[in-house]
Image 1 (spheres, helix red, strand yellow):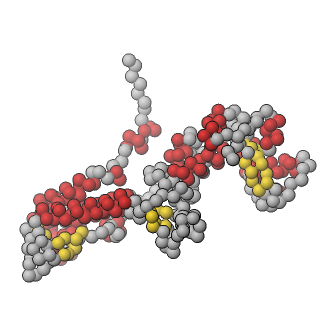
Image 2 (cartoon, helix red, strand yellow):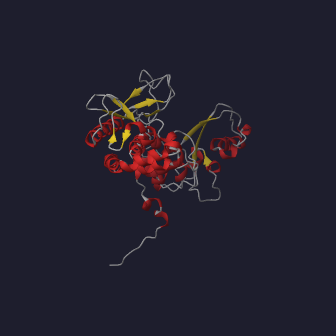
Image 3 (cartoon, rainbow, N blue to C red):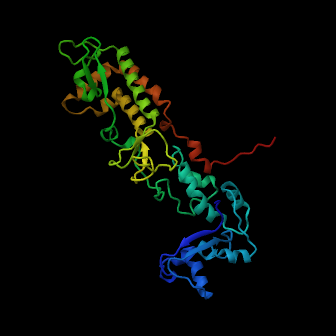
Length: 352
């Protein structure tokens, strides 16, 4: 059945027993009915409609809640419509509180429908509906109140913590087929000489060419990008273990092991997120950042690290430009300042 303006809420206890009954519409309607001598008891379903436009004497929606019979007496006859027609009718009807219905009845289902779409959030959807986000307590996709707490910038987090889950760079010597991990000049100083990165095999000790390193690095970069674009979703409940590439019509809700939306209360999330890919690219770039290597050089080997960094500066810069090519395509690297500060930029109108 198509929705209408009437909302039905069941009484869990006597209307007088609600401590915050003044803010609950169905409680206020029940109290009015009892004042008129009607019988209202626990378990009754109370229908009500929020009237007014929110600009009248009372801004509290609970005080403007009335039964459908009372609304009809005031010549407001709510009808039944399709969902789209209902939304449009809300915007042009004078007798109902548009904002209250938008925030309580329209925003939640739209929020659930748009939750799987990456890049959307509840605050943005509320703004698109014309709601004042400062006036209401808007909740995000996960059901938690949106908080504007300050969080540390990624650049201020130590590299050991920021790149803790990053995949290490593995290089292979074409001469002896020896495979080894390269973690930068500071940690892999024994793999670096004045001529470049050398094979750790003592029987080989061949210097890897820049072309070989670039080819292996780009291959691993593409592997990481492929993991992101595969778009695998995993359940937050480790006991469930649901892993799929299909997005549920329930939004982020897990459909469970049988796919029937039963047996699991976890939430689906991307296994390989955009943030993880961005940090992975930055980690690869850090391995060949000679300036950072010199700044982090400490202890008795600091002078050796600085000398090796200077001797390999040109080679490492060439390798680093391979990662830079991928970072230039990463949206997390760029900040649109004109969008952030658009509210304080004056609009200039030129007369023709």
